[in-house]
Length: 299
Image (tube, rainbow, N blue to C red):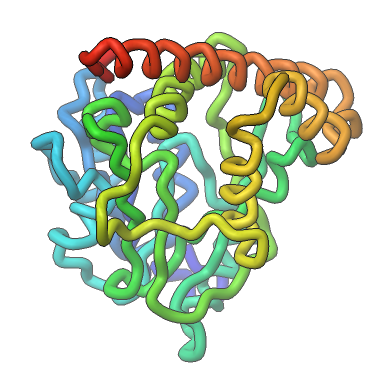
């Protein structure tokens, strides 16, 4: 609730989910200050819908046809939002009271159309403050008519699922930044990290073997753009470099000062190096299959 008025603020929140019963209750509690909360579900089977109903959220089912748009863009385009401003929050993310206050002030500003939110990652019972994982800026709060997620096509869209994960919002307007971070509980244990990054590595490897279709809306890869655009430029620059897993460890642990996060920083950087090794090996698999004349992207 708004601390000033004691009432909910004129804000819409989009929460994309699939089998998020373990996370959703705390997520919805952290965004209860918003007048409209829409949970867009992909036919969950673990009680997710019951949790959303108990919290008073609106539930919309999304059945993907394996074509564009995916879940978030579909929701932005097809839901009749009650308010001009929409906040996008994943089930494993939390809005802190400090960030809530900033959001309430931000949506009253007439001179800005969207805001980047900084995510802080919880890992091995503590916050990651370096490693290239913090700061982690994402455009999550914007006037819903002016923002859409980029469309990244890698051939067979089923590979990356029905929800935008790696894509970022393209805003037709001016953006600002909110200081208070959002809390992100994506990796409650090492097994979850490994499982998610096994899937992500398949997507990353396959994406290197395809070109964007003409007219596709994506962020640029440039050393002179935003932090995300610079990161993409650096990624493209190093794709053909030798010893990529070792380079990734050195990048996160030394250049991004992962050593300052102690043991959890060391473990995270080692895991990121292993993640890079999976990408390299899967790239070779896709390349070999493609050269053989038959490319299949499904896992």
